[in-house]
Image (tube, rainbow over all chains, first blue to last red; front, side):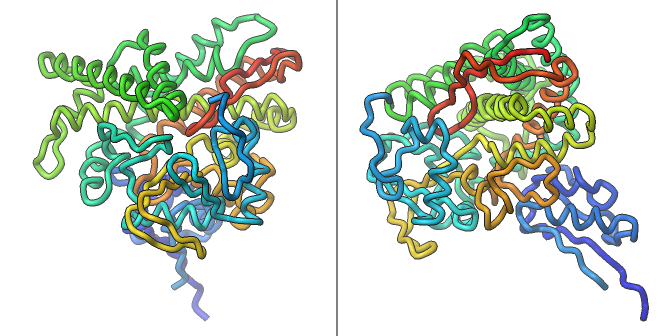
Length: 70
Length: 395
């Protein structure tokens, strides 16, 4: 079985710029010029950062963060 | 407000100006959540009070049935000059908010942190070696007002005037409309002078920024800019002052949290989020503009909704042990800054100010407690926080 790849994705429609993801996991998220969140690059989560990805998801007030297994 | 008839039943006659509500609203909200999650009152010409997170969230997201044109529940429905974007509904809301967002990102707000910390240290220096002080009056109330004055580019020495306007608009003015109208009039005149001065002689501050700002090639009218400046001033001061005061009030009574926070600076992030959840200062309002049903309750047009993010934040369905303050709470989707399109524009600013105020305070006064001989008093109305917070300093 191939090892899973974990990705984070910010739903741009739901995001309201609380910036919690960027505060908690700046390795995985960045903010645009309006302060709205988006995943860095293609959103791939290195194994060592899985807990941070979940933490960001658990603290988004708008439920805008998905953690996807591919 | 002291001669109001007391609320007889929180579910059918609630009154958020009742002294019991101002003093300690949490048991009232707990009771409502279990018995009648959406309360109503005929006071204030009719208003609803949702007490559960999911209902507060549903209303915050529903801009079709719930308008932001009135954001304070008052005794009358007098119209006031708009303060975009907080009083804007779609589609006007979007450009009014868009123009402000770049000035309030964490990166831009970081530029004000050194000045904020200087202000905190100056205030602590002034308290000096005294054995007692008032954490609200001598410290919390002085910080956000000076930071916002600095950002806007208006004199920090006008702080007393700003606090007076805010008290008139958000507290006294709930029951006395003439006071609100006068305060709005004075603020409009104040900012009109500053906008005119900035046009004559440009400066690098928020007023200058708004004058030059364009969204989709459109600049904003003076009327719009002045409305936004009134909003930044009203929303930027007693909200964060209340939050800082509540944090100190908590820490004064919880030695373990105080010592942990002083010893583990890494906890400051989650601790501030937990204080924001548990002691969220800001309750907003909406006006029902189209009939709708939520959780079996019919919302009638013309009625107001007291939109309590503080009550949502104490809902145990959303937050396990909601009435316990756990400074290392890991999952914390609190709604202290609102939900949906009206998310507080100043959330990054407020967080920076609270963190700076607490860490500077703890560095100077790691030990403090409530003064048993002097009572804590709380604000009344839309923003909740201690207005008198007598503290004993030192071990």
